[in-house]
Image (tube, rainbow, N blue to C red; front, side, top):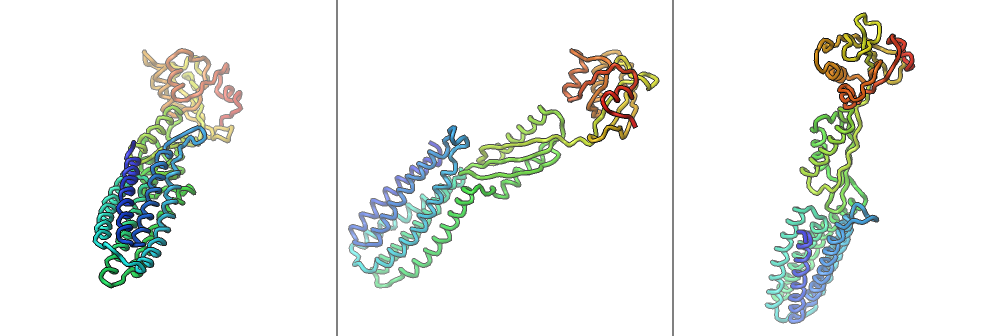
Length: 393
């Protein structure tokens, strides 16, 4: 049994105890207002039973409800708000009718009401603290309702005391309390309906999530961020642009963001990250060249030069051609791997070669960098690119 369920169970016990002592005091004193307050507490007892049921049901998931029944809590919060409005009506009726009855055994009624007020106040504070701790809308709503019960008890107490000493403050007190009840009930109703209608989560939470995302390494842009509440839980969805073309790395970045959000923001149930690579503004073809810089070299790692032909994604004509010296052509060991890493750093997209790299070091480098290998039998770069439907400028 979690904290929320324990609070609901305590509420049932407290309300049952309060109903017993209020009903006893009402029968002893003959107070209609106190009897009405006793049945008001009985209604609270029924609400507490509903809260416990809501908390039990809310966390369950099934094939029909894969995201759980979290909104049961918000639905119950709306029901509690209606009970709050009804409590206002009860207070007016109770206090208006209390003066028509001769009160007997006032001391017993007063003692029972004082005990009720103290008990109710302590429980309201306890429920509010736990509700804030676990961010439960149904407990927070009920805590506000219980606070109103403190005032309703005070109103009845004033009615009995004023009747005993010959003064009547019932109507004035009732108007003040009913105004407070209406305001509180509207706040609870508004919060519950907002979640039921999938309104966005609070701006503070969104700003906290936004900060986590944009401070994550290799996240170059946050394109969209949204979230919604469901019961005490939050669902986050974001679209980001990552500075990588490696899908595995992009997936790791998304996983890190999800982990950080769940660890730094309370009551996150699910984080959905859509990631997109940075849009390429050019496509770079690399061709190994001989010492004359005119023909394609037979051996990739031994090529002294490389031609880098740059194309716009929508163009078939190179807008720029660079000839780069291979810094590793005279290296004795691992020249193929070092050359492949050199091209990867130059952000090459495709390598045009006269031979394959199966089971060789450069092939693993190209695979990790998502560089495509294109085989050709041509001697001249111009002809090799022409076979691909491309032209040099």
